[in-house]
Length: 335
Ligand code: FES
Image 1 (cartoon, rainbow, N blue to C red):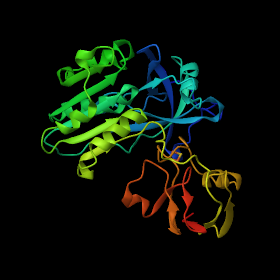
Image 2: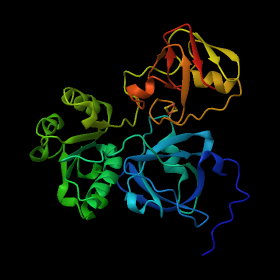
Image 3: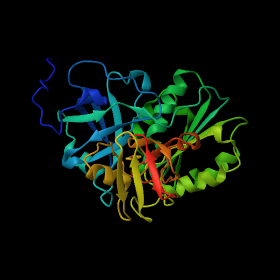
Image 4: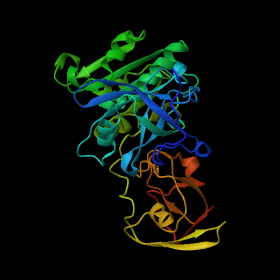
């Protein structure tokens, strides 16, 4: 079959390769649950996609100017052939998941970004314990594939309301590592477990990985408080409540060192909004401090970091401009 001609795509679908973007075709849509659908994305030009490591996510550029990040859940070793994502429809959300469910049909074209991984597996560990709450299981499924392929010891615990709410159920039941999976269902008391107990009972030296809704994240953050930071890995798929709403807080002055420009960031506007308003390009996918698309180096001043994607080390030099404020009267960016 010939690859579709993508040279005359509308701007919204036309990928900019200099920004690491691709135009892909929705090759398959799967209904996982009443709320969760899965999508397989393949490149239109017959070329291989960039390989994605376990825990990676991609940015989807959706109709209406929306951009959202979704974790890949397929086998990382096969990612060059196609990317798999699973998206839960959140009608009360900000519109991204609704746009995915309404727009992505088999055969449709879509612009996406190159995979980025903020939630990588540790290269070595005596055991990897993966804990997923609801749709938060998606990156952990990719991790389970990768751990199985490398022969590493792991287990995957999934917490859901009922069997009908189990995302990726077919994949979990068919995987060669299905014996490592335990599903904990709210509607089946015999299966219920406190996720914190699984942290306390983890094998010596284990690494912990978790992703899920905020209550789940908070419980596991507390349960692993005394663990060495290098053995605890997590990813938010929504902004934690501690994160400030972008644009709240007092105003401050923004200095753009390379451009030799000074801009005022008022209360009620984020740095990214001010940059956009001045015609200065900055990628903003999640606008919640999660995806790292807006990370920008800074040179002077003290940012009030509000993101959940940068490490402490990275925060010494970089800032998420979609949500950070400044603790000093000025903040100097290296742009
Ligand atoms: S836009 Fe996602 S972290 Fe800023």
